[in-house]
Length: 431
Ligand code: UD1
Ligand code: MG
Image 1: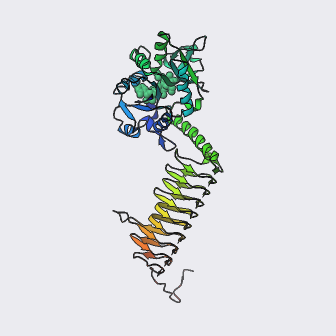
Image 2: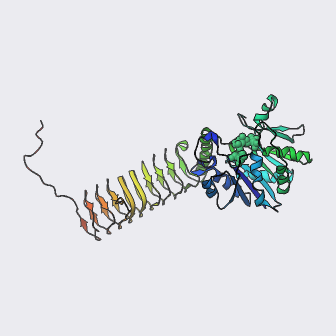
Image 3: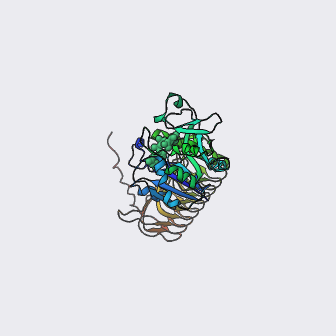
């Protein structure tokens, strides 16, 4: 059994936010959930240390346990908060920082594997700009002597390129003992997790620093670093999408969510945004400037350019959704078409039906939402308003410009507009 303690009690002052830092989203998901997903591949138990008054964080990490660190007395103190939940636990425990969410499962696997050679393992990196990271001081043999926080470091120590990434791993009985002995005798008056290195050395225990790329171990302390993390995750997601058989013509302009599913031979043109919850089946083309969220696009469909697919939408096989078309809780049957300037909300459209330009479902009466049902093989003329609840039958034809307030039977023609009157000689006399 292995457990992970994730520290996330800090408010993240430098984010200048009303929201806890770890709740800020990367690829549409709170950063804490990225880290939890990576941890789930290696650890059997996960305990999150939250700050006081962070119910949204405690909810976001469910079904994993959380404990509250009432007072922010440092990373070492925060790790200790998990102790009551780990009573009697004898397996390995890793402590990770919630604001370092990009660590990969492969790196976590290397971390726990390195425990075979050392009693205490930590993750380190050599960032291009070591900035204010804690520095890893090694002895002549390469073992870690101690980690010195930037605030406490002297000139020579600040010149060290090897930085602490903030992940340690040891057997819980050892780690708990080392944590218990920490003091706050330092510049910041905090209990530093990093001081467990010296505690382990004092007992003559072996340690090891496992190095990993900066891209995985970068901490997020500001919105600028948040944007850098977003870029890193987007790059990974785009690469995975392309390796999975999707074409992204201009990858850097496509924004994917953490859970976007793109089938084989999907083509995504430039400037498409995927919010969470989107599944796109094989052979679909998504043309430029489209926005998709919580929807399914069945194989062979064509979406966009400039289409908006909102939650609860399902676009059937081979269906077409064209420019300036908004779909919300809409089910489009196989081969149906809505090609121009249309709002379809709370609607079911049967297979092969054609929705003319400018068609609007009037689904909201100001209080409630109502459904529109359009049968198969129907033809809705341009500029039709469908006042829900209403049903248009199979193969029905609705004349252009109609305001449909009553059901239209199968195979019927509905005309619901004022008749045209021509008045001879009454033309424009302005010039
Ligand atoms: C920490 C490390 C530093 C390392 C860097 C990597 C320590 C003392 N320093 O510094 O060596 O290079 O991370 O990013 O560990 N937290 C709590 N409770 C607390 C204090 C912090 O839960 O009382 C949490 C924060 O929410 C955050 C994480 O621990 O998720 C790290 O804390 P932070 O203040 O960001 O530490 P750094 O100064 O970045
Ligand atoms: Mg930090």
